[in-house]
Image (tube, rainbow, N blue to C red; front, side, top):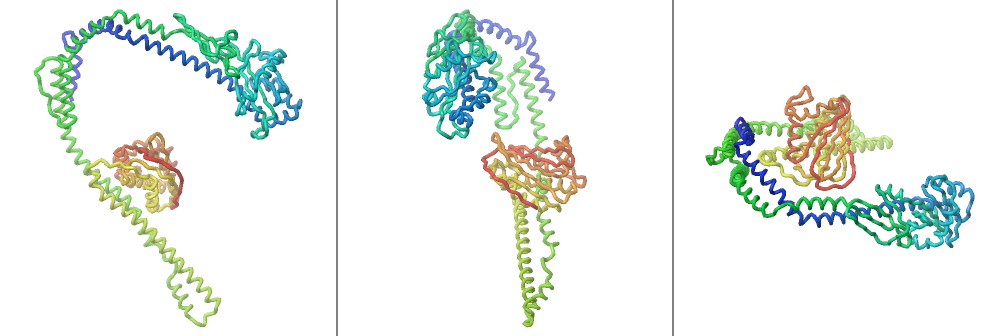
Length: 624
């Protein structure tokens, strides 16, 4: 790579005053100074309308934000009054008003907790059952505001205000004040029963509260209420008036605030900067600049880029033709050719090494996966050989011979018949169990044959990814893995189909390897039984398969080491190819594999990540 470093060094030489870089810097400086003036004039034709549109959008945002703040303020009152409307105590009170209810639920403390200034219960015929208005500062009753509230209630058609809903909110004028009003029908807590009137709450709103809601100086204008938004502008600011609408949709007041015309002022400043330019000068300078760049830089660089594209498409590391230039571009081309020569030599050496290493690893990986698949077959055969017959044959023969006797007492005959029937049934169960074990062995052997048969195709091509049900693959390998060791293992996994983009055979081998490792970890812990739990979830187009065992586990910092080729946590074994092959296989299927553990003796968690194809739901378990 020495020639590559030399090429980088020659690029640094562009900073020399006599170099091509210095010439380009001088040219760019001159063009930039002249072009910056001319470009502003070109921008002038788009600056003014663009900033006017931005200012109009800003006005609309201020109006919408004010409407939202007013609506939220009123909706809070409506939410509070709805709790009193749908309340059995209110419903009973309207039928028979009581002082106890008024003391408990209509007290100054209750109104303070509700953050309202006024409350009233109104009968269906418009009669005021009770009304109250509190001073927000002292908490004392205000008879004047109470009278204004009662007068406002009599002017409002509450049934029309509520409409088909059981509650509503709006604003109303109370003398020189404005209040947000919430009204709700009085019903039982479960919403049943014919309404027995209305409960009404009012919360006064002031200019200070409006300013706090809008986070800018604002005031309530009661003298000049307009049903439409009005905008008044000065050279430096805008005054915006938004109507505060009452129950009939007409404004009861206006929210007025001023905001600076920052966008318009900014547009004017930019326009003033653009006036001094000259469009014609910019065109001339750009033409000159383009020709200079094309001749000195772009054409040689384009030649280098075209050659790089040819190298990328063909894969042949051919050399760049030498034009005989003696400047920095020519020197860069010479260094580039030297780098190509080195890369060609390195590629040839790497191909030789990769072929030898790939052939060795491929054979070892196949044998490793074949061994994992043959393990359950060996276990099934061993169990079948070692398993004793369900009934002693000599005992059965004696029972049959004794039944053949004609002088056998009836009680004795019945006992022998029951014994023979039980023996036949036990023999049938044993035969069915052996048939199920042989069927599992046949599936394991099919997987071995499939691994061997597909190896040559997989060795020369990238695995084909297709939608496959990972739940079925987990279930199949869990059934086989029950026979992979001497310990009893409970497998739990979801029943719902989860489709992922993967190669079914390779994914089955990966999961089989992980199940085999989990069984070894459970056995290494020293217990006679264990559990392997599989969870599958989907998010953001990815499917995550987590295989959790309660085996011996490992130290958290050793997680990355487990994937190294040749590494194994088993002192009596060598190789360590399983996890190394699994990680490479997951990468080949555009997925990922990682291992996690909370420490020695606390189990391990293998997490597979693949692209999702679809999803559904359910859960099953298999006990070994």
